[in-house]
Image 1 (cartoon, rainbow, N blue to C red):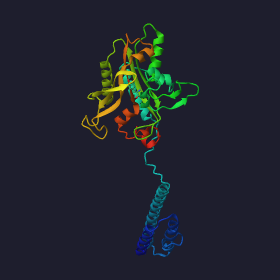
Image 2: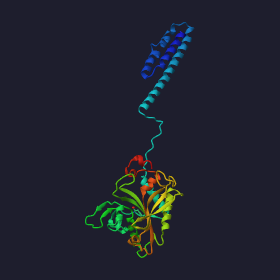
Image 3: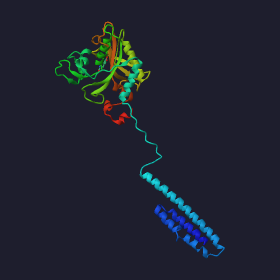
Amino acid sequence: MLEQLKEIERTALAALEAVQDEAALETWRVAYLGRSSPLMQVFSKLGALAKEERPVVGQAANEVKKALEAAFGSRSEMLRQAALARALSEERLDVTLPGRPIARGRLHPDTQILRELYRVFAEMGFQVYRSREVESDEYNFQLLNFPVGHPARDMQDTYFIEAEGRGDNPIVLRTHTSPGQIRAMREMAALNPQNPPPVRIILPGMVYRYEQVDARHETQFDQLEGLAVGPGITFSDLKGTLTDMARRLFGPQARTRFRASFFPFTEPSAEFDIECFQCGGKGCDVCGSGWLEIGGSGMVHPVVLQNGGYDPARYTGFAFGFGVQRIAMLKYGIPDIRYFWENDLRFLEQF
Ligand code: DAH
């Protein structure tokens, strides 16, 4: 009898090992713990045993019953856990994964570089002056010493908006931020026409040109113009200001270089370059020659001062202008200007 109980326990536990789902578990329970199971038959035969055998076999049968019930319980729990894990994995839900970060908005790289430039120039005492994007030919060209028909106009292919009945003064999209120089000077001079106050401003904004679009040219882009007018302003003030700008933008070792050039509204005029931050002047992929061409500059032409209401006998000034995207491209190593306005998140999210 005791042998038989051992055998019942062994086969029951072995059979339980093979149970993989709730239905099989129920079948197992009926077979090994149910009313007509071999174990229950042992209990029902107890009465027929000899008196001294009865408690021994009875106790052994009880222990087997407890063992099978415990095994049933833990198997049942194991199956429940496995079923839960399966359900979770089928849902692709892993509750232990960290949450997804909420995507936050960010500033366009253009806005970021503009704000950095505002900060750099604010530290040097320049205020921001905002001028209009739709201009007249007079402000965009004539008052800046580009007379009608002047060949220097060919430097900037112009979008004309309205020419009908306007003769030599059509409406244009500004091709550069320089017309803002005249508007700012006139506004300042109007405050005190006999003694116009000094001017120290930067003029940021979009400019428009009828260009063939490629990696370096867009039909619209940002310029940053600078203008300082006052008694006794010299070319060395211009050089100092732009060199300081380069150091604040690219680090204290940045050097600048000025090359003689021509613009109708400055005399003398110079293009200015910044030593390449990438290679330190040796020449590399970013710069080619070791120097980065940044923009134009010069001493404000007497005719322009006059047109702005400042007497060129008493006032001098310097001006400069450069492409904002150019600075951003150099600073961040952006190879193509078209990325700025394609609105591709793969580009924008890098800033
Ligand atoms: N307006 C010029 C351009 O768009 C850039 C420029 C050159 C601006 C020299 C200036 C300057 O103020 O002094 O090509």
